Length: 210
Ligand code: CA
Image 1 (spheres, rainbow, N blue to C red):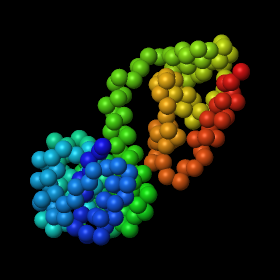
Image 2: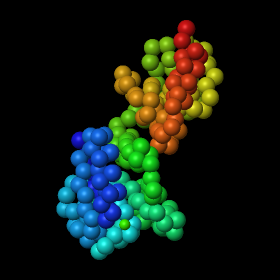
Image 3: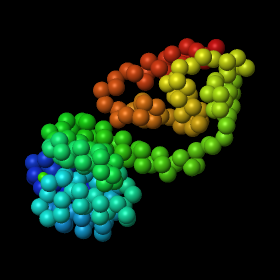
């Protein structure tokens, strides 16, 4: 179970975030004061942090800067002010993503999950195969040429189809949820993406199935 620290002084918002995160099986800790939030962030173990910007005590920007040396896990910042959002994007505070208020809870959850998956991927990256080509049965993937061969015949794939094949062939035997395929190939949070992955998988099947 992933642990989330929410630092948010508006109780109603913190409670909504908590409810939705708990429904998605997260363990949630809420701090409503920035200084307490910072102390908690430094003394306890969390997988991800959701930081409001305007807080009593230490503000979200200060918290983000202070924890960055020791906390390499994802930090999402939340703000209603356009100036803040510009600052989060521009200043290299070390936030991984931001959510503007008022936010859609489904989107908030999608962003939290995407950041956690991205974080886990960074760790998994080194263990993933670094080889130049992969052969699985009749399929041969040449990573240099970005080419797929089926039974020795080159198959034309679009760039997206190639990325999907590379992902799947690099992890033989692993089952990927559509959500994860989408985020790793399209590099965006899976939100309102509906059938797009299924459509691509179907096209790939038509090309590679004999
Ligand atoms: Ca606030």
